[in-house]
Image (cartoon, rainbow, N blue to C red):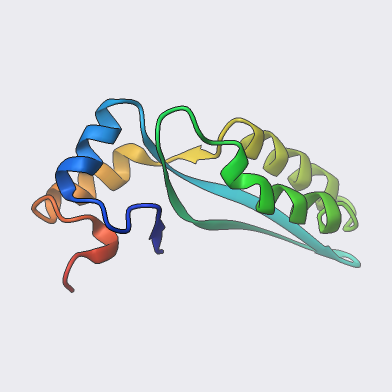
Length: 113
């Protein structure tokens, strides 16, 4: 998965932002086609302190438009996705930060393979 929002940031800047309350999150979305319902996750986004719900708006809109139509999982997964997105996304900061430290302070999305 790609990490969006850290382009052009140094490792020190990322750590500084995390210390200020920044976090890594992903958003959920749901798409239904007749009786089939798919629940997926977005890429990971770095969210500076104080921002969060607006970054997940595209995924929320996809769920609102396309998620409800599959019975029974469409409504269930749509509500779960909307709750997650309105809470600012699923926080995976600890996992990403551990990966960040394991790569010697290089953000995982740009670490050499």
